[in-house]
Structures are given as structure tokens and as C-alpha cells.
Length: 205
Image (tube, rainbow, N blue to C red):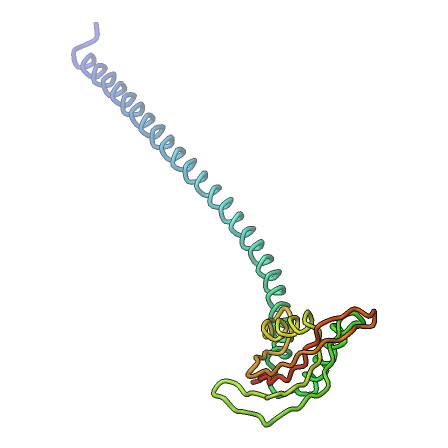
């Protein structure tokens, strides 16, 4: 029969083994819980990183599209700017440009004058330049013989001058004198003829 000291030693060893097993179990559970938590954290971080990568990629694509759109708009803006500057030279030139103004009056006369409706510029006289604060004026006196419809078109031409779309030199009428007569066009139809002398201010820079 085993002695008492042996039984105590065996019991103690069994208790230590059980304690060790419980400790190992606790450590294993703790390690598993720690690993699971870290894995969850890693999964969340990986999802965030993937979303950030997708967002960055979308931003890069959007940036590339915006740059392409800007480049296209910039080309259009530069083209429009060039067109405006070109038209501005005609509408509000840097110098008096009386030769070009005479050419435009001649073209306007050619466009208006027909066998059924007369418009004749008999005289163009340029006078001394008048300096202003922000512009200069080239006074022009003209003698014109015109039908009533063409007279109205001439007034509208001067009134709408300065428009970049119309490219007509910026002008206004400072004075006008009218005489009326009856005349016949080439078809024999009687029409009212207006002889007028007009003083025009043509502006330039």
C-alpha cells in the first residue's frame, strides 16, 4: 500500500497538471481572441485601404477628365479671344483707319443701291481728329441721295454700329440735314428720294 507521502505527491502533480492545462486553455483562448480581433481590424483596414485606392483612382480619372475639359475650353476661349480681338480692331481701331472706313461705306453703298431703291454717296469729307479722355473721334461729313427705305437702313446701320457681331465701326450721328424730292426708279415707279447731309463721329482708340 502506497505510503502517505507518495499519495500527496501524486495528488499535487495531478493538481499541477490540471492547473497547467487550464492555463494553456486560457492562453489558447486569449490568443485566439486576440488573433480574431486583429484579423477583424486587418479586414476593416484592408476594406478602408481598398476604398481609398478606388477613391484615389476615381479622383485621378476625374482630374484627367477635368484637365481634358479645361484644355478644350481653353482652346475655345483662346479662339474666341482671338476672334474678339480681331473684331475689336474693326469696331474700335487703334488709329483713325479712315481708308478702311471709306471702304466700308463704299461696300454699304454697293449692298444697298439697286435699280429699285437708290443709295448714292456723292461726297465723303474727313475733318480734324478730336481727342477725348478714353477715345478719339474722326468727324465725317457725307452727302447722300437715298430712297426712304435705304435711308432707314442707313440710320439703323449707324445706330447698331459698334457691335462685334456686325463688325461695323463704332459711330454716331451728330447732325443731319434733309431735303425731299420725288423721283422715278429704273422701272418708272415713283419713289420719295431723300437728299441728306450727315455729320458722323467715327470713334477709335
